Image (tube, rainbow, N blue to C red):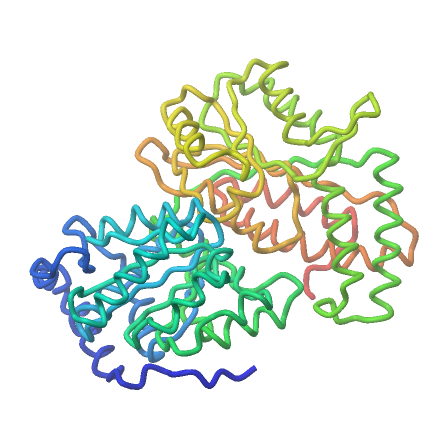
Length: 493
């Protein structure tokens, strides 16, 4: 896919990069901040209390050297938002940037971006929910920009609002000196979102710990074609821990077996996956395989024996607090024929049976209620949060000290996001602890097992990598090596 849109060639990128490099090398960043103090209200300036980390300077420089295009692949919690606002400030200072446009997948990310923007002297328009709450303000401020009555405009919107006619109709009025930022940019690879990205805007920045879309090479290519390739060097989870951007952690895998009924369903799904793969080995174009993998992933995510494992684990941890419980979005079957969501079953075990003070935290929880729950969790009034999905991306609750992951996933993005979420630093947190429930596959016939072996090998590689970075690496690796030997998995390919 080729993108023939503007490349912001009106900017002398070589000079801009060289200037930024010289200032950071000479450690004059702090002195240069003083120049920002003369800027008008609602225009970007670095907070006087902020000291950008060396890897953030490197990321900014890489984006400049790539002529205002690129995707920053940075570990969860490493400060992608701050890096983007650092680029914004530098562009305003050097080329007179006029607009910052940020696109987020969720409403809670809009509010988090707004808080960070306020630190940078910006008062953003929050364009989501009703068009009547933001469209007139956006039109007025765009007019003020064109008539030189206003120096800068910040707009933060959600993916769903961005593709509406009300927002799309305004894009033609955005000036050339506009920076578009795609937050959690892997979400922008779907056809409907990608086709609505403005081609006339040349300054583009994508942010994601995991820009590659799961089983969607075409969507990944669309993201990189629009925003630009992944910039080097990438900032990995290991880098973030080494630099102190994330805390160290202990890792404890908890192995869980399927019930006989679940094992039978699992075997049938795995067999159908094998048949589908034999017909078409290209997973990114095989909708049948993708659907079957999702069904099997959901089955694993809500395996009934996880509830007993949770009950056993938490019976010995009733005095702990600041614990996060990740749940699947499927159902578990109880003794009665009634199906209940796993999150309800987990909440019942923790709260009703064990007396552990918890509340749920989901996408259905109103924003105002979320803030109240987060405050109670921060203060220890709540010992735990039981969550699904909405904590996979972008939510910042650094007081989390322990996580119990019940929702297994083969999706590398969710794997990285979930594990990175608990490693954010906090004054009262020296290290984090992660209990990871891993479902062991049942015995399968020879033909079906060959399909399963390849899928399990990939999953075990991710688990081994995470175990390798843990403080208790030797013990965690040994547990996973026993699984490797049990299933005769070679990790060389």
